[in-house]
Length: 328
Image 1: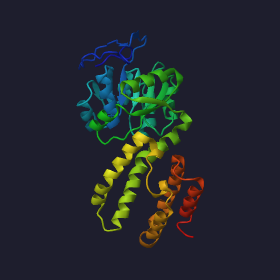
Image 2 (image 1 turned 120 degrees about the vertical axis):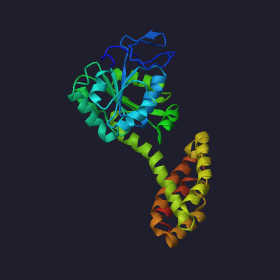
Image 3 (image 1 turned 180 degrees about the vertical axis):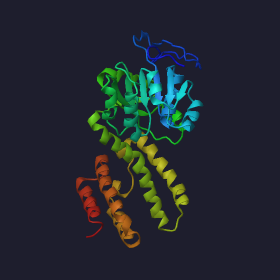
Image 4 (image 1 turned 90 degrees about the horizontal axis):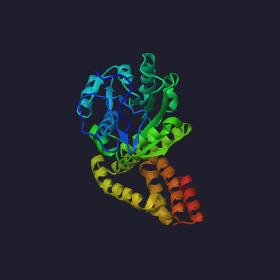
């Protein structure tokens, strides 16, 4: 059984060889010996938690325990993280100085409360969650004991543990933390190969909304385009195959030129007639989809104006056309 809280690591310059032992170790970060080295516990062995634990352990962090509600997820984590595994979240937390809650959003507050009620936290602990949507209030039960709290949210979408392991490095992380642990949060992000941006706790809803628009609503947008082709008798599979090269090209253009710079098409050119024909076709064939097309088009006129390829008068003309749904 691993020793209780007290010694371990929270970062190093040169990682040691991985080991299956639970020996206490003290490491350096750069040239500075940390006066209070840390040991980490991962609570929630899903895709994100397992990947975070795997990467940090490879970097030399001392992952002393992994806890999860199901044996299945613990068995999966066993392939990626050495160390003590348990289904008792409080038992795992008792072994660590830094506890990272990587459960589903709806389980963060209950898991934190359960750990607190069962003596898993003390006043020297640091507790992080990885949710983009949740504020730090869900960690109040840890704060009440004296622990410092924060959140480290990867702006990334993961389908598998292996995908998460490869995608976390290079990702941007939204970091929200009490000032005493902000540096530690940044150090963890750096060890994961990410870039940290600081997000105020009160700004988390809009921060998360932007992420949802870019990821979740993007999927909805492509599904919308597919559905237009389906109305013409093209299968969903063929429609996606046709759209993917266009999507990839657009993303590449955004990466090199920015969002406004990547805009092409009739609105970017200020070409009114094609937009009118689009609206007529929607009205006659798929009127139920016309409103969404118009809303997307209205915002796109603002992007074209930002790009500088249309005048304010032309933007207003296109906007009013779309506002009226093509009605003169």
